[in-house]
Image (cartoon, rainbow, N blue to C red; front, side, top):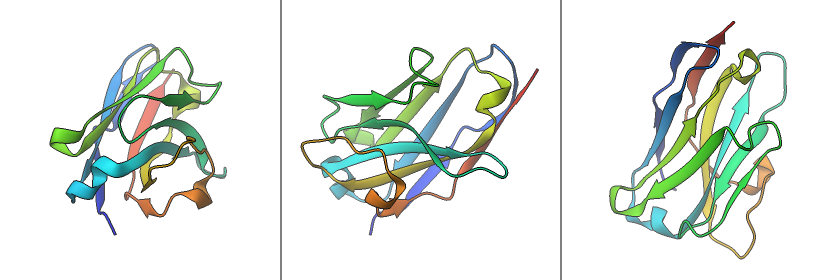
Length: 125
């Protein structure tokens, strides 16, 4: 198991930016594909973005494409989610998740077996 810890959440206004970080506890992280998910009150947890173990591939949900960017620094065991042009609909608890790397980035929650505790992002109008 790899422990994941998110940080960087907060309260911002519509149009502002935030950068979330997710730090991993073990070097094996560098072999993991990583995902970002979010869950708003009363809604299911949904896919936001994913990045391959070597950073060579990324994927985004349609709702954030063009506004959010994920990246990673394997030397620091950390991935990032840069969120620009935030909207009130982006309000949610954001989670990072990891799985052993494969040839295809995956977007379903059940395919990830390591999860962080989440960080709250609130966007006011």
